[in-house]
Image (tube, rainbow, N blue to C red):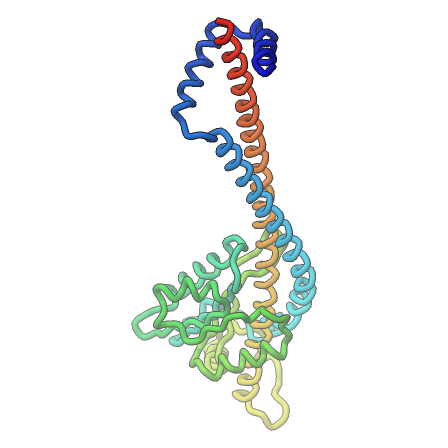
Length: 322
């Protein structure tokens, strides 16, 4: 019965096959006999496993994009509102990044997590360039690092210059009180003439700008004001009460640093989530394109397997009749 069915199938497909194709099929059967058993099944199984892994990765990247979008909406409003805190200080005390001082402290703000494009590398590159610019024979430059990613990059070649390193800053939603306590700890543990805060200012989901904000010490502010330097409109105000000009400048410098640091942390957090949204969107699209290519490969492999089985049936029927 089985042999009769095989002969019938062979007669049905025999007119479709030429003698050359039958000989080629016979040679392929001989070569396949030398291959390990189940080789074709393994190739399709490998492609199926790869397709499954790519689908899982695509699900993860889409979920991460949605989470980043949710966090961005929550932080963006707070970041925009915080800009009104430090802008009056810029008008009052000025922002003079080109001032030449002996003791510089570079405050580099980065994220604790990756998968957010080149946002952290940009901050580190700006910090390293700033370090070279502020270094000299009679000068001292130190780092204060906020964020794990900047620490991991700067510790390689500037470990001895890192004064303070703080991580997991954005683990919980930050408010001004927490940042002001952090700023107070930094001011107590470092000696500075100028604090230079490096962060990424948020513009849009696909755009952020590396930014440098400078906070001068009260002594430098008073020295620059006496020397006729450009320090805003400080000299246009009269001092009332029992406090001296030095005490007022000290309080203003501390308050200015806490306000600038609060805005810088929020701006950098917005830039991080926006960069992560863009990176995860690109990853999802790339995973979709790879899935399309794998699906095409799988279909071709499966079709080739079916065609080979049909050739084997026809060749067997032809061999029986011949």
